[in-house]
Length: 115
Length: 116
Image (cartoon, each protein chain N blue to C red):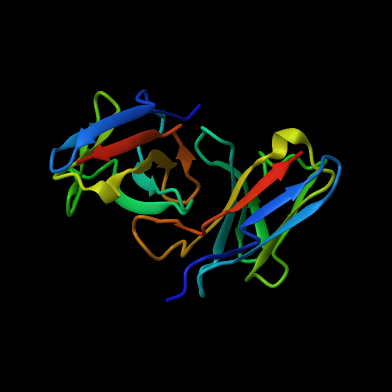
């Protein structure tokens, strides 16, 4: 069965510092996609970054980068230069195969950025 | 471009009552999803539509939950009768399957249901 594991219920980081949010996954498929979403207190899920299973380079989107270690089945999110507005819940998710957009989500990590 | 619209944002009902949530996806998005997010958990897929057809409803409690997308655009999710454990945020999302490489889902702000 497909599974996403986020072992950090909460993380604290000081403004302007970098932080890594952990995510491990389990799948028997060779083709899959990994996503990170941010959920602020307003409730909307905001797409941050995507990594395909066949992508050889780690994905980057501005201050967000994905540390993809396929052999270890991990897809950690790195946020550089944290900002107060980064305080939110962060969810790792997985899509299996190319023929579906269905996502399976982890339980999330609450990130709090302090001045 | 307008995002995914959901209503109502908040709803409080007593157990055994009924409730309906409405979602209007991004224009042109063929695929629509309803997710249930219980407090402290990640979203869980309830049902997926491709145009007006159901693709996946394997996790929808069909004895009390129903959903429709009659014209392949907006959608309604209904719960009847509600139970205490249905208290959650109901998130609607849409995607342009077959378009974007990443298959990114676009989410609405959700409808928060409290069952007393």
